[in-house]
Length: 110
Image (cartoon, rainbow, N blue to C red):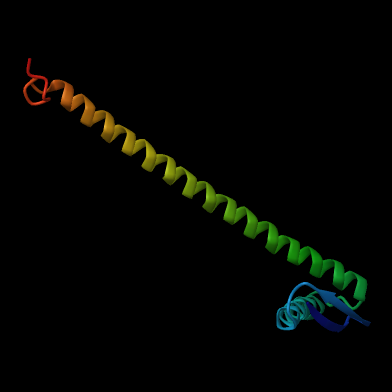
């Protein structure tokens, strides 16, 4: 369980989470990068507006990442379906080849 003291955008408080301290520090550092970029580029000084824009930025990143992962998972599933279909075709071809061969070759000599 990790603990983190947050001092950002005029707010100061402590949090506790199920993650370790280092991970929480990385999250806060990333969030600060985003808020600093927003304050610099949009010249937004209001902490609430900055926080909302940072939240939207993070949601945008998350949404795009999930969308990309969904597309990647779909490709993997499509590839898996194609592999299974090809294996089935090969087995059908093998059975059909056996049916075309003479009875002696199939071990069906009477």
